[in-house]
Amino acid sequence: MTVSSAPWRQPVDRTPVWMMRQAGRYLPEYRASRADAGSFMDLCRNHDLACEVTLQPLERYPLDAAILFSDILTIPDAMGLGLYFETGEGPKFRKTVRTQEEVAALSVPDAERDLDYVMRAVSTIRRELNGRMPLIGFSGSPWTLATYMVEGGSSKDFRHLKTMLYDTPDTMHQLLDTLAHAVTDYLNAQIRAGAQAVQIF
Image (tube, rainbow, N blue to C red):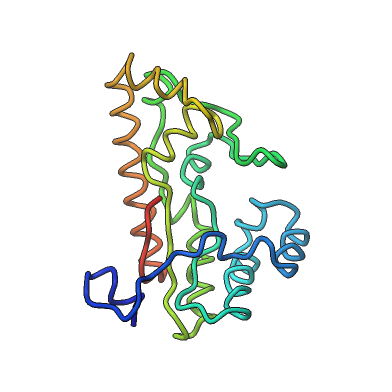
């Protein structure tokens, strides 16, 4: 099977393609589920609804794997930065991390405790899939997470990030090191919860 062979660099019958937004944000059933949840993050934090929207595209299309419904920025949210979404503007954080003191104050979340809603979603999805197909989990990479944490949201010029990178490289390295440990713990927790493959963005 393509999904199970490709991560091990074994020959596959076709090249795997990651379908972005596989959760089907354009699908009417997804929109109904999100409306029921109240907000995007409430949808992510409700393991039954996260399972529901993970499975919705599989009922419409002959896909080879399920992709966990979540967000790439759950780790910094668990670090206390306050993730929220502005309509038409994407994810933002209520707090940013730009100084050595702010970076030093960060701690690696306990993935199974602080991000338990993700683990509950993973285990619920695996149970509902019942062996039909593999489940893929994911996380933002340390660099991706750092860009959002320093900028406070998406950016066109990454001015604050570049300032940290060039003016205080030790602070940037400390931030990336903390995030590398957090991402490792988070993905391992997803695997323990039942994810059969994980991807880093």
